[in-house]
Image 1 (cartoon, one colour):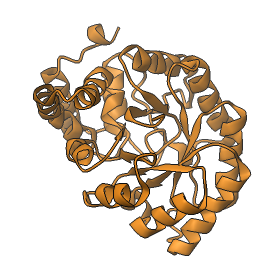
Image 2 (tube, one colour; image 1 turned 120 degrees about the vertical axis):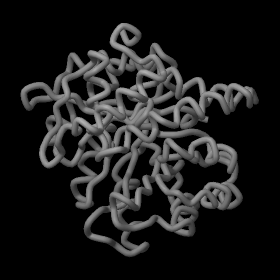
Image 3 (tube, one colour; image 1 turned 60 degrees about the vertical axis):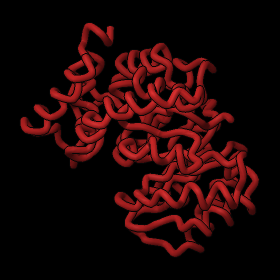
Length: 297
């Protein structure tokens, strides 16, 4: 299966207000070297809503070029404006992305029929596989299980879902309805172990920005039925999962990566760097896993 195991929802590094291409190449290279199974540029963690189209293209192009076919690149192509989402999707396809991650439109709060129409417009504009993205905490709405099933059965390139939902019945229900070929990817780092047990295939992870080797090892242990290692790694990662969401994502991840010497601790408004209290929580979680600049080099 192309979309399985540990995919990383990559941050977009900035320096002095601009996309830091050199830092991004370092981040992507480290991901692959440490065993990540796939890359997701320009998702929520990539601060995509604040990127201009030329910046979006630069990020996707850099990711595709640096990955060089070693792992699949699933480019975010999400917007609450369908025309813009189509434009992003077409751009990603032209730049060599392997798949698209399509979030349900936020703020507008479309009906399920509106979500279907939005997805259909992107599907018909490109030839790439589409992974749906359900993230109610960000969008204010849910892609209902029945809608996922309808989209997968009606549109042949709707190939999976990233489900950032605490509802762990959903993967079991979707697996029963759609079979083994539909990719079920968790979007909730802290519940990924349970998600896999309920029929999931992997995770699109924020934590993997910081601890790619640990996250990859978790999925490798599950695949090889090494439950002792799986449980140990899952428990070891829990404090870092919590730390990555102690304030709005991707601020904690960017702080952690800056501590590792991989990028500057810079975000675009309206996001701000983490507070001192949050930084202490992140520091403690990283120290417990022995994540340091020396280890990241």
